[in-house]
Length: 432
Image 1 (cartoon, rainbow, N blue to C red):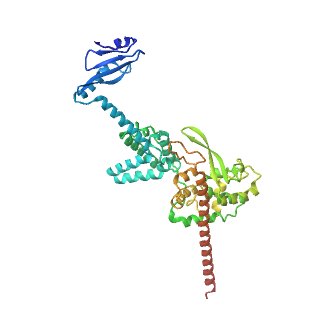
Image 2: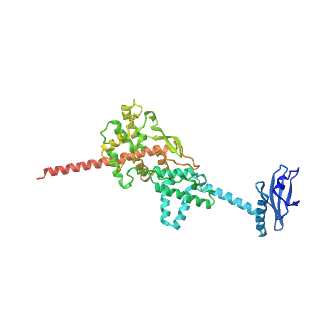
Image 3: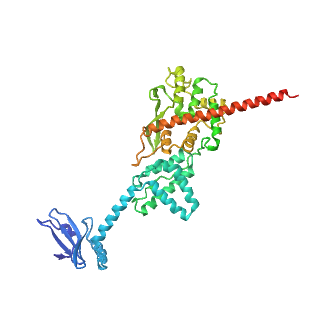
C-alpha cells in the first residue's frame, strides 16, 4: 500500500493482528511498519547488485515523517553510488565498538604522552615543559587509570592540589589547560566522547602561598643531616625535645603532630592513627590517616609516655587547647640553631617527598599515600587508608634509618671540626 504519509496519518494508524507496512508516496523505498504491539518503525527498501535489502531508519514518533524522508533521501544517494548502506552501518558499529575497546585499554598516561609528542612537534620547548608538569604532579596521582575512567572532579582536585598544597598557582593554571588540550586530543581520536576537562572550574588566585622553606636538593644532603643533628641537641623539656625530633621522622603536618593523643597510638602494631577534616568542593570529609612508626620513633614515644602518659595529649601544655602550640615548636627549633628560612618545621614534608623519591627510590604513589594526598586506582577511586600499608611500613623504617645515617655523619663531621678548632687554638696559645 502506498499513500501520502503525514504525522497525523501515521499517528492514527492502528495495529492489526499481523504486522503490515505502508509505503510513502514520494518513493525512494521509504515505508513504515506497524507491529501488532503498536510499535511503528521506519524502513528503507533498496537494491544492491540486483538484491533487495532493507535498512532500519528509526522509530516513530522519535523520527517524524519529514525527518524520515530526509534520512531516506540521504541514504538513497549512497545506494545510487553502489554503497551498501546496511553493510556500511554494521562496519561503523564495529568501528565504534573497537574504538571503545581500545579506549578502555589506553591509560590516561598513554594519552598524555601521545599528546606531548604531538605538542613537541609544533613547539619543542612547550612540549617539554608540559611533560615536566605531567610527570611531576599528574602521573603519580592517576598512574594507570584508563582514560575512560577519568572524571572531571579528579582533574579538578589535581589542579587545586598543585595550587593549594604546593602553592604554585601558575603551574595549576597551566595544568588545567593541559587537561583541556589532552581531552580534546582524546575526543578527536574517539577515546572519549566529551571533553570533560572543559568543566573544570576556573582556578582563582588565592592569597599568595609561600612555599615552606625546605632542603630538597640532593647536593645538600649533608646540610639536611646537620639539621637533623641539631634537633637531637635540644635542651628543652622532654615534651618539646621529643616533638621536634619526631618532625622529620613522621613528617605529619605540625598541626597534626601537636594534636597527637595517646589513645591514637597503637603500641602493639607501632601505628599512629588519627582523623583529619578536609573540605573539598564545599563538602566536609573526615579522613583517617595511618602513620607506621619506626623503631626509632617508638623509642622516643615510649620515653615520652613515662612523662605524659597520664595526659590526653602526648605533648600537653598549659594552653586553652591542652597541647603545645605552633610557637612552642618554632621556638624549640630556633633554640637548637636551625635557620627556619632554610628548613621550616613544615618543610620536612617537602624534604621527605624529594629524598624518598630521588635518594631512596620509593614509588611516588606510596609516598603520596603516606603524606595524605589523593592517589587514584585504575577505576578512578581514591585509594583507602590501608593501601600500600606493608610498603609504607618498610618505607618509614628505611626513612628513619636513613635519617640516623646522615645524622651520625653530621655528628662525626661536627666532632672533627671541633677537634680541629681546638687543636688550632692550642697551637695559637703555645706559639711565642
